[in-house]
Length: 146
Picture (spheres, helix red, strand yellow):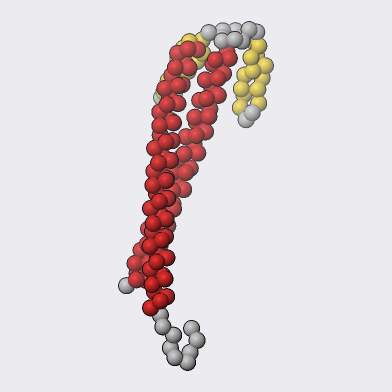
């Protein structure tokens, strides 16, 4: 009876650990997205100050020096693969709104992960208690070592 209950608890813990890993992976992705948004917002702030040359990100940490033609307007992905021209201020405002949504999701995910960890710790304590009780109920047979 107790061993069946321990097996169920072990399976439940394993499922919870997998969920926790999935949430942690999602949190990492969302944090990376937030970091990109922070960088873009800072770049937009600095773009207003650009006079003649800017660094153009090509990808994988590679930049090209480029001539700044119009530092007042930028192209912004507004969703569904649609790109629209916006002022730097409008683009910054849009990114700040998106960032707020992402950070809210990160906070909710962290809270869910913390709650899940508490539940797993509770299950672990309960399982250890049950195992201790099982060990106490095992009495050695006289004359034989366990």
